[in-house]
Length: 350
Image (cartoon, rainbow, N blue to C red; front, side, top):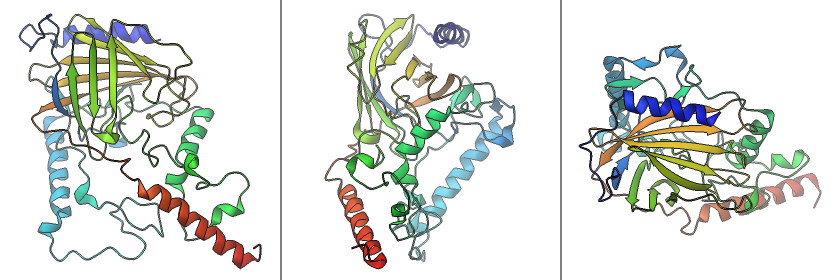
């Protein structure tokens, strides 16, 4: 299935005029990707239902989305809302939290999705996903849905202030460090992938390129992907959180093939059978076109593809110190033990 898409994407590269002779190149003549990029975009991963079968937005529609986001950011800026009151006990509708009883999180001011929709050759896609043609990820397999739920148990648990998980058989969402979601443990997750998708913040990437390696430092979760050029995959038993990535050049397009993922991956719902193909191409304006195809038959009912532009930037990529202490993880577990103790005392089981 993948080779067919390789041919179609390569054709699009030439037809779209992406391969240009005047782009910045290395001494060996290859396109030089070295630099910083902002992958934040208001283009959603999946096509909103309001667009139906419409593949592209008009510039006016894209500008409307841009204006709407600018307005949201302004209204969320606490400096422009000096009388903004503290959130009510138990959370705020504008806060990322786990439901009633949540202790709070980031308010909207700190969410930075991007400033505009992704523009490629003067066009604005209605979604990052372009295959299937409906612009949406395909259905998950039962196994893929279960794996997604298992990985998000600690994130999706609705906190009612009690140890309600004791009423159910089997492991609880907070039994130990290994039962917490990968992102909660600062291993992989959020938008880091791979594939590398835009997230709610920390969307910057830094690329360092040599003749035989390319490193992509992702601001989100501090991950650094190392892509070996003109190499071979390692043994299947050597499984990595980010997979084993090798790359080669097809004219001015870098093709990256990644396999050998672990049982759980940074692509939510993906598993050890994930096979990822990515294409990187420099655009005339210095931006980077990122195209990817996900093939994971045990997680999704069919393969799916997407693309969007990373904008060239002079901004730095700052450290994401998720692992620095990670006090939240210990506090989550301590809190769960206290709730369990209270519940057992109330039921007379202790």
